[in-house]
Image 1 (tube, protein in one colour):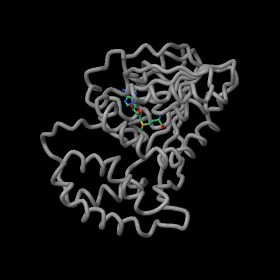
Image 2: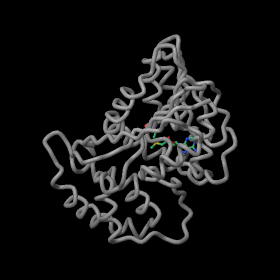
Image 3: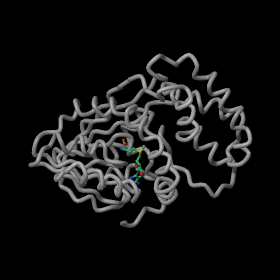
Length: 289
Ligand SMILES: C[S@@+](CC[C@H](N)C(=O)[O-])C[C@H]1O[C@@H](n2cnc3c(N)ncnc32)[C@H](O)[C@@H]1O
């Protein structure tokens, strides 16, 4: 593992520990839920056979493998993630799948040697957790060839993401964020790039040109049934984080929280699962060189 920027140490600790555990535990539903957003992003950034692609904050490597198919044997995809357990699992899965054109770096995107030049830097929900997003995206830009492109999917505002926000509203009624805690948090968090102007400014300050944000709204599968949906909401995102930070006092009222969450999401239950409104930006930009 390469050095981690001081302002990312806590988030990297969280993603290397408890957040890896939770992501892996709920991967069955999370992988299905977020795939439509990356599918839309691929259509916009059009990875081409023979290209070299960097997958930023690649997690368990699902997008890395999908991109590897698109660039083919003449191309290459490098996944970078700060969580060693993520890159370890992703590399094992790539080997099991016989993918010969992928490689993984364990490192903090903000400071790691990213090993360019790349034609495309892609990210699905992997760029919202940097302590210094300008520095991190500047590092990404400097790994791109002149004219190389950036394509990143980030969450839009909370109100438009009811799959997480309804849960947060319920949990906020009962729990208060502790001032002191030993539990690590995931840094700026999933909504840090929700504001279009701020995100455009961040990407511009990192040196990118021709910045465009395309809104992409797709209903989000929270789980096959309400039990699974509630379990995931209580494990990840703002509601999951608050429950984790509060600890034993939150666990004591878990049945009450579960009951209220069940009511909060009841109208979203369908025969084929629980589907909630969700909204993202797909951010495109170019490295002027
Ligand atoms: C929400 S997950 C998304 C994972 C993956 N892109 C996907 O769509 O399945 C965010 C990922 O970003 C990684 N991450 C967070 N901060 C990072 C940093 N500073 N450098 C590299 N990776 C980071 C986390 O370890 C985690 O795997």
